[in-house]
Figure 1: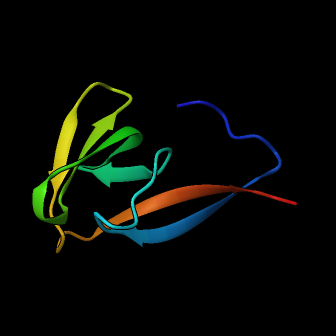
Figure 2: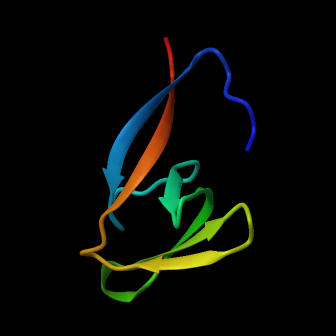
Figure 3: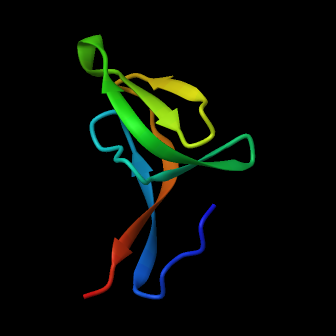
Length: 73
Protein backbone atom coordinates (compact mmCIF):
# COMPACT_ATOMS: atom_id res chain seq x y z
CA UNK A 1 0.00 0.00 0.00
CA UNK A 2 1.05 3.57 -0.55
CA UNK A 3 2.54 5.60 2.25
CA UNK A 4 0.11 8.00 3.81
CA UNK A 5 0.37 11.75 3.30
CA UNK A 6 1.18 13.71 6.43
CA UNK A 7 -2.06 15.62 6.06
CA UNK A 8 -4.19 12.44 6.37
CA UNK A 9 -5.80 11.06 9.50
CA UNK A 10 -6.74 7.39 9.86
CA UNK A 11 -10.03 6.53 11.54
CA UNK A 12 -11.07 3.04 12.59
CA UNK A 13 -14.68 2.60 11.56
CA UNK A 14 -17.30 -0.08 10.95
CA UNK A 15 -18.60 -0.26 7.38
CA UNK A 16 -21.70 -1.81 5.86
CA UNK A 17 -22.92 -2.11 2.29
CA UNK A 18 -24.57 1.31 2.77
CA UNK A 19 -21.47 3.09 4.14
CA UNK A 20 -18.40 1.52 2.49
CA UNK A 21 -16.44 3.91 0.25
CA UNK A 22 -13.67 3.76 -2.31
CA UNK A 23 -10.33 3.99 -0.51
CA UNK A 24 -11.51 2.23 2.67
CA UNK A 25 -9.03 -0.39 3.88
CA UNK A 26 -10.73 -3.56 5.11
CA UNK A 27 -8.87 -6.20 7.13
CA UNK A 28 -9.66 -9.74 5.93
CA UNK A 29 -7.77 -12.79 7.13
CA UNK A 30 -5.14 -10.58 8.71
CA UNK A 31 -4.41 -8.75 5.43
CA UNK A 32 -5.43 -5.21 4.47
CA UNK A 33 -7.43 -4.72 1.27
CA UNK A 34 -8.07 -1.27 -0.18
CA UNK A 35 -11.43 -0.78 -1.93
CA UNK A 36 -10.82 0.35 -5.51
CA UNK A 37 -14.39 0.26 -6.81
CA UNK A 38 -17.94 -0.60 -5.72
CA UNK A 39 -20.81 -2.19 -7.62
CA UNK A 40 -24.41 -1.95 -6.45
CA UNK A 41 -26.25 -5.30 -6.42
CA UNK A 42 -29.89 -6.17 -5.78
CA UNK A 43 -31.50 -5.74 -2.36
CA UNK A 44 -28.82 -3.31 -1.12
CA UNK A 45 -25.82 -5.64 -1.44
CA UNK A 46 -22.52 -4.41 -2.89
CA UNK A 47 -19.61 -6.04 -4.59
CA UNK A 48 -16.24 -4.59 -3.62
CA UNK A 49 -13.29 -4.64 -6.01
CA UNK A 50 -9.99 -4.42 -4.17
CA UNK A 51 -6.76 -2.99 -5.61
CA UNK A 52 -5.43 -6.57 -5.58
CA UNK A 53 -8.10 -7.53 -8.13
CA UNK A 54 -10.08 -9.66 -5.67
CA UNK A 55 -13.84 -9.28 -5.23
CA UNK A 56 -15.96 -9.46 -2.10
CA UNK A 57 -19.75 -9.34 -1.98
CA UNK A 58 -21.29 -7.88 1.16
CA UNK A 59 -24.96 -7.89 2.02
CA UNK A 60 -27.01 -5.35 3.95
CA UNK A 61 -26.35 -7.05 7.31
CA UNK A 62 -22.58 -7.46 6.79
CA UNK A 63 -20.44 -5.38 9.16
CA UNK A 64 -16.68 -5.07 8.66
CA UNK A 65 -13.92 -3.22 10.47
CA UNK A 66 -12.13 -0.74 8.23
CA UNK A 67 -9.74 2.19 8.23
CA UNK A 68 -10.81 5.36 6.45
CA UNK A 69 -8.38 8.12 5.59
CA UNK A 70 -9.54 11.70 5.98
CA UNK A 71 -7.57 14.82 5.11
CA UNK A 72 -6.66 17.32 7.79
CA UNK A 73 -7.88 20.84 7.20
